[in-house]
Length: 239
Image 1 (cartoon, helix red, strand yellow):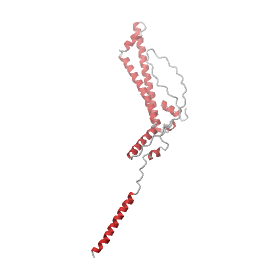
Image 2 (cartoon, helix red, strand yellow):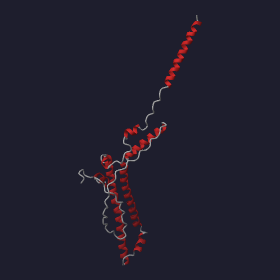
Image 3 (tube, rainbow, N blue to C red):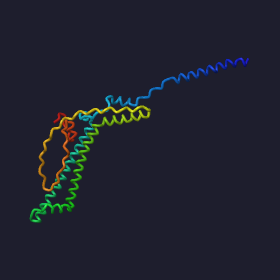
């Protein structure tokens, strides 16, 4: 009786084995899920591609940025005024010293004599150094304003570039091709600049060191750009 059960048991074991193998085969025939698109977030945030520069009208809507530009502009004006005062102090001391020497000599002091004497005059050299430092500070203040404007203009581009670089890294890690960079969109042409009339400069006292004016820039296109360039708030009506 016991030996008669063996054939049925063997058949049941074989059937179970066949079912298990079939299930494994069916599982192996399924397609692998497609890898996630590493550029999905980039395309969602920037559907038009790499953005252009942030224009003045858009920058004017950022209250924190406008406040910072105004602060930097006021600092630049103060630095310019300090540099001008330092230059005037140098010229004034030189003129007074020349009068003093001429009075002692009973005639106009020769220029080479004055230069030699002033080159060893401690107070005059201190004034020269102060003027040089003031000029450098004024130039730095102007560059700080310009850099703040450039940073804001390129803010969206920097954000895009950072997100694009991260998407490229994810593509490489997933074994996918890195997306080719799209051609840059040309910026709209700037308005033609009109030649500026050279302003007449007053004659400096003899021996004065002329103050180097900043390089002329193109005229601001609107009230906001004028405010950024000068640091002076512009009234809502533009006056």
